[in-house]
Length: 231
Image 1 (cartoon, rainbow, N blue to C red):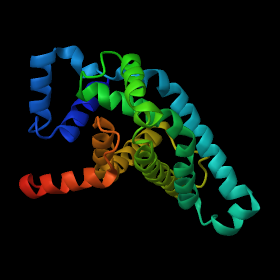
Image 2 (image 1 turned 60 degrees about the vertical axis):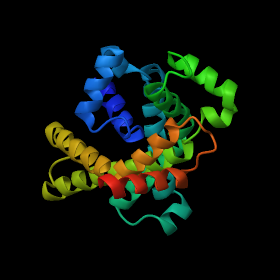
Image 3 (image 1 turned 30 degrees about the vertical axis):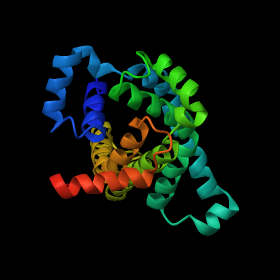
Image 4 (image 1 turned 45 degrees about the vertical axis):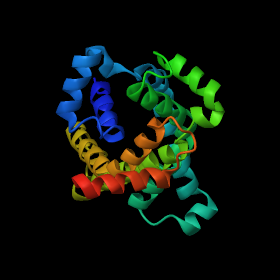
């Protein structure tokens, strides 16, 4: 359901010289490449979704145990549930990034160019053939920084909202489903509001063909564009 929006987001971020806005990118993509172009790169993401979420929650649980139950964790990190959840959120992406980093690289390349063929496997194989493992996994560090920051915000905010509800309703054992749903939605919105600049850097970095392009070069490009067109 969400992948077409993801494709348009990446194209607007990584190819701002081609697309004025999301509507223009959608119109141009469908008219030139057909509606299925909106699903380009989905093959790199779908097989990894279940493992990624499994690894994320396993890492989150492990992170909480390290922070709240070990001697070092109790001494240095156990401030309150907000900080515990936030730190465990960052920690969870140590588990996720080895899977998510390469899949994001393949998806971004597939969404922005036909150079490496059609289909995620062909893109990965041709990237690896041309650029080696470094090219096939480019941007993994930025993946960790971006989504690790997002997980910190998401889990921290979600946990703090649940704690607030339980503090105000001492007889309740847990928050109602509707409240949890709203807390999750609010946490996700806050997460993306904060990490969107990081996400743009990551997506541009993972879309480039030149494996030598650095994060600082991408930031320089964005700054130059923002002077001309605004933020």
